[in-house]
Image 1 (cartoon, rainbow, N blue to C red):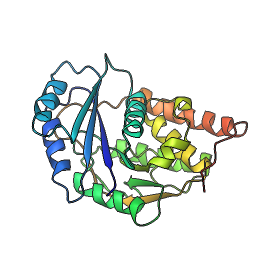
Image 2 (cartoon, helix red, strand yellow):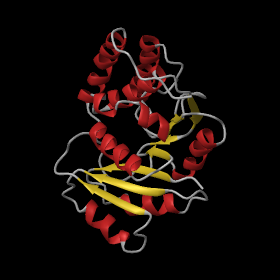
Image 3 (cartoon, one colour):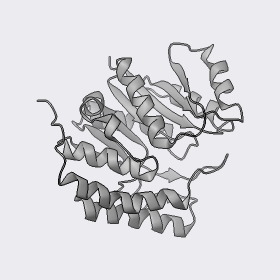
Image 4 (cartoon, rainbow, N blue to C red):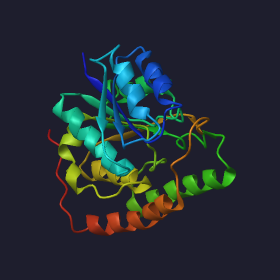
Length: 246
């Protein structure tokens, strides 16, 4: 049986964290959960540690001091997951914008359909976003179109944050060379996996905007993605990427 780890980065998610963990643990596929908390002052980490008493072998937490960025949180989680022998490692938000019921579909894409990276995609079958302002929908949609044009990746939702990686992908990618922290982190991870020769597959999902808690989105994150993708493409002309084994 494969070992599966869902990484959830958190900052002030006390309204969501217990419910999202319980929803993940209720899935028909067994998923362990690693929360990477950036010093949430609202007590998010305390809720997780209280829950650990009931499932110490399925729920884990890494506590960091202060807001160090989404990308670095995932990198820390990836390294933790690799060190603890997980076969499939997932990225997921805490706020239910990603439906835990879709986790088995991402798992199936990698475990049974031959994907190396399975992407929970908002745009592969139209625009499947609920409760976002139209301006934000258009910005996100055309940002992915722009990234696809610049990078040449055949991925409709390049900024998606609901992803499953086979461990071989994370072992091959040079994680310490991943530089971006916001939206551009998601682009850089997919682009690097693509350049290393891995197969990316999109799985259609419906993205629902958070109902509880506060969004961490900012204009600076979009700016990083816009200019970062050009830098990624230019750097790729001069960089030798590691190749997948086999």
